[in-house]
Image (cartoon, rainbow, N blue to C red):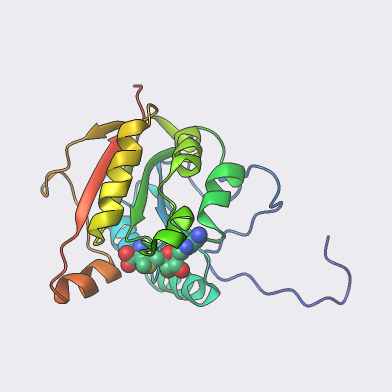
Length: 207
Ligand SMILES: C[S@@+](CC[C@H](N)C(=O)[O-])C[C@H]1O[C@@H](n2cnc3c(N)ncnc32)[C@H](O)[C@@H]1O
C-alpha cells in the first residue's frame, strides 16, 4: 500500500510490476496467453528478447534486468514492435528465480553474457553456482532447458565444473544449427573484438 501523496514511478508499457514482491506471481495475471515461457535473465538492451519474441509469437518472454535505463529501453522497444508476448521485470536475477516465479513454470531460461567477475576475490558474486542452479531447477518445467553463453573462458570452465558436480541438470549438445538463436548485443560487440563465445546447454530431467 503506497501512502497517499507519495511519488510512485509510473510503470513502463509491457513492464511486469509484481503486485507483491514477497510472494510468487501468477503468470496469468501478467501475460495474455497461457503459452510456453522463456526467460532472458540479464537482458541488457533487449535485442535477443525482441528477435526471439518476433520469431516465436506463440511463446511468452520475460526479460529480467536490474538497471532501470535498460528496463525502460526494453519496455519501449517491445511496445514499438508490438510484442504482446513480452514482459519486462526490473529485479535481481537470483531473487526472481528464488522467490517470484512459481515452481515448474519455465520452458527455457537464457543466461547470455552474464558478468564474469574475473577477479578471484569476486568469484563468489558469479551467478553460475549452486544457489542459482537450485533456484533454476525449481522454476524449470521437467524437460525445461538452460542456455548459457559467455566470452570468458575461465567463467565457462567454472560453469562447466559447477554443472558437472550438480545432479539436478543433464548436459545437452548444442550445435550451432540446433535451432533459431539470435546473437545478443554483447555477443555482437565481443565478436567484433575477435572474442569467441562458448555455449552450454542443459535440461532438467523429466518429460
Ligand atoms: C554483460 S550484460 C549482457 C546483456 C545481454 N544478455 C547481452 O548479451 O547483450 C549483463 C546484463 O545483466 C544485467 N545484470 C547483471 N547482474 C544482474 C542481476 N543480478 N540481476 C539482474 N540483472 C543483472 C546487467 O545490468 C546487464 O544488463
